[in-house]
Image 1 (cartoon, rainbow, N blue to C red):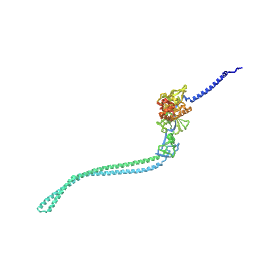
Image 2: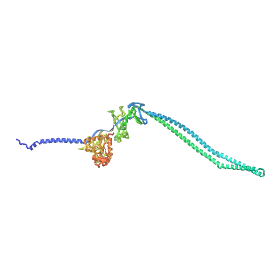
Image 3: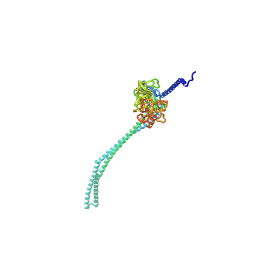
Image 4: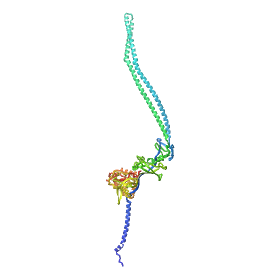
Length: 632
């Protein structure tokens, strides 16, 4: 009979089962714990990319419009505004000389009638002025002739008086003196005899007194004649001569006045004639202008071609508000109405963003696909790049700078039509065997392009030499081999201790600009996988959550949002950071966890660095080239 088992014996008998159960439970728990930890780690694991090697095409893809290289633009040449009363349907094939547009000319007809009346009045005034000039010249010649004759007579009067009248008057005065003296002598002789006869009592006292009276009269006449001659020589002749000479001067001055007056009258008449002639020419010119305006109300086809309304070709900017061309519409002077394109040679017109401008150059090959012709690919070359940005785009968005570029197609197709939408791929470089990584995996650290390569359980920075990018992948020339694993979003804050360079903080990505998918970061912002970017809200906004407060799903959405940002949005974000005050930058850096005394991008102290696309503390910057944000 077996003795009862002691508790110790029972325990020893059940021990293997207990140990096995413990092992099983522990294994299941460990597996569950390991799986949970692995899933958690995988959920927060940083995004990576394996370096690829193979064909790589560096290109710039832009939408555009098909246009004719040789097209005639017909504009409204009627001054002011005019109403369309006839318009040929769009798409009509016309021949040279066909009527395309007719504008309302009723007001111009009325204006032409008024202008004809004005021309007739101006013509009559011109004839009157011309005849008046002839009369004025005739009258001036007559007045001058009369004044010259008066002057000549005045000169002759002086000569006549000096040589004729004055000597004659002197002789007359002397002859009177001689006669008076002879009479005086006879009267004296008679008086002497009368006195002797009176003494002898032959004559009476009365006869004696009569002879004495005759003697006294003769004496007075002699004295008067002498006085008259003296007066003539001393006063009368000099006064008369002075008067005659003064008359010469007066007539001479009168002659000058008449000449001046005649000249003034002639000049005035000539000026009036010229004014009337000018007015007549002006009125005729205005009448001819109105006639030309009436002629221009009808626009004819200068060549054969397909009618395309100008409003159908106008897109973008303020032109988007243009109403379709139709009858009854008012058009203004110099407004483009109709295009007559030629189908013999076509081109594509695209707008190249300034960030891709350094990549594109004249002569590069281009592949063009047309939306309306699926499956067909047209080839061409870049023929022209505008030296200045498009004014219409700049007017709508001053921060957007795009340059009109013409791509001439090497071959044309009858199916190609002006106005078709197209996609142009400008081939910058083609590599048959190239090493490449995504553009967001490269940043600038210490002035050199750098990627973070997996090394053991972490990632280590490795400088690389890069070429151009195609907005998605960047060509790695040196520093990486195919198969290596690189971090897609390198930790920008890891480079704060490095020496910043002049390019740090600028947002430029050598060689071309901000990379597509590069996450704009504020100074001190953490843009590692799962970290919130600086663009999640206004910089320094109260209540903005930091990266440590976001879930993995929120961080993934934030990364996707910044990867899909357009170049314009990135530029606006850079401008927002550039316009921040030093206090706002300091506050933002404290929110993002950056030390207040760290050197911010661009070499500035205390949070005064400027945020940029992919810019980070310590002189780091997203690397590959400008143009990374999609070139448009």
